[in-house]
Image 1 (cartoon, one colour):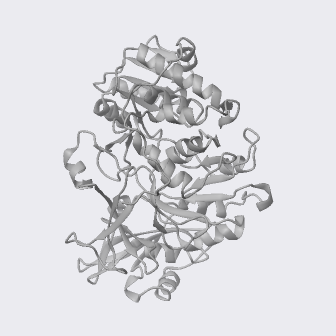
Image 2: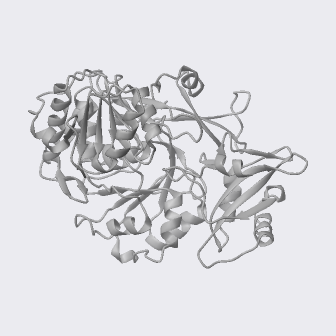
Image 3: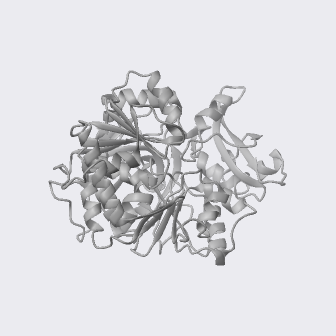
Length: 523
């Protein structure tokens, strides 16, 4: 692994929250975060983080104990996340779209000693707590919507009752800093443990070195802060350069996104937008799409799933700016393989981010030649420490400094990489591997198709063939035969979908990834 020479490693004693606050001491009056209710300056953020740290320690919480962070994106989220880390505690950042049963599992699994929660999510948390053997001693509620129980305290009152901490906890760069739960498509989510050094490396290697974010940027991410992608986009990257971030509590629908693009929240227009392919498709198909002259985007990023070339080209034709597509993971914390703002090759995920090494391996564990699909392995400084309490999965994923992604990729002649699907999504048709994504990317080039998902389906002979679930654009029509011919004209004939089913929508995770396992279950 070769780290760019100008990037210095963090010191052995290192607290990431303290590091971010220190980076912004010279800009106390500048807007750090803007949400639906107002603006939080860097100076105000500094004071509130230190009050949060002191308040949590005053509850009797000790170093490395976990605090569940179940909160919509708002100005209280970075205060809570950084405050816990400043105190040497470990915030466990969880998806706000889950069920009470999910949170019950996470409370027990993480052994959370306190919860920081949005008022709008308190009822779901309460239900989770009643059905779990939890260890929670205090619930701190951001923006309550109903009177609170004696064991609950309003976040603002909690902060005001605390004297700001005068110094951060003396954590090490390799100490546990926070958890993210992986969004695995099946089974229980995995508690992915990250160190204080890990987000530092993503800021330096990707936020600064690749995206080249600037202090005068205004950042806005459709991906929420509890996602690895969103955490970098909306907190660590902008704070790393002193930029401003727009935070949005509601779902990133096209209309909600456009409202912020046009500067209708907080009076600021984003210059940087982070999205995902599914979101871009929805926005381009929306009748409310703003005029180009009404937005101020200079940089647009995409991750979460591979970006179809046609979608990237359509967006550029609209906005006059390329979508910089990349791939990251919860395990690697952010993007390690990416196109570049000045060098975009649509249809590929780009080139390795300097500081990360990439290998593609076959079933025998040996490197595969260019042009052949292989399992993607990454070696880099932001890799997670482990999955908490899951030694088997830890060993499967983290192998001697290398992290197995679960994705299949092809390396191209120019050193770029093209996505070939998940390891367990690859289809073998007539003895030949077929990439579901390749077929999907071809289907969406048809004028009538909005989205497509391809899975394997057994035919009458028990042989795997491809089946496509297709969502049409509003008002558009086509036929199975027309789509089959369309694919045959553009790909090797064996790759065309033998079965096509038209559906109104596709099952997706909270991050917008298609849940192919649900489609496979449908048959």
